[in-house]
Amino acid sequence: MNRDLEGLRNHLFAQLEKLGNEDLDGDELKQEIERSKSINQLSASILGSAQAEIKHMGLTGQISSSQFMPAPRSPALPSNSGKGPDQ
Image 1 (tube, helix red, strand yellow):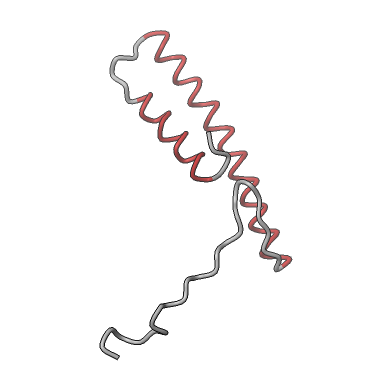
Image 2 (cartoon, rainbow, N blue to C red):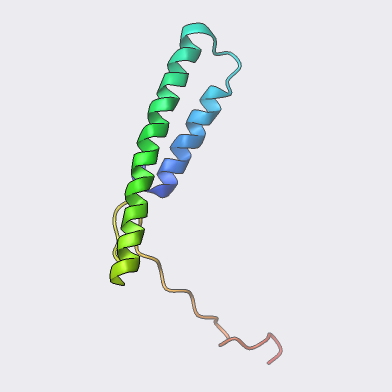
């Protein structure tokens, strides 16, 4: 699993798909529900940490990068300096 925001999203959606499996029943379903609860709690902690990181960047004006949240990339400059296609 990737240890970044996209990896977290992918993992959450994969777990959601498991919960939607209509073949699960009884103990298997209970196990997936408990696993989902644990994943939800861990995800909330990870996102809380990311929110603290964003707040820190806003307060200090520093743009930092972590493995979870890479530094933002500079926007690409238009190849034709913003002119229309006929100019």
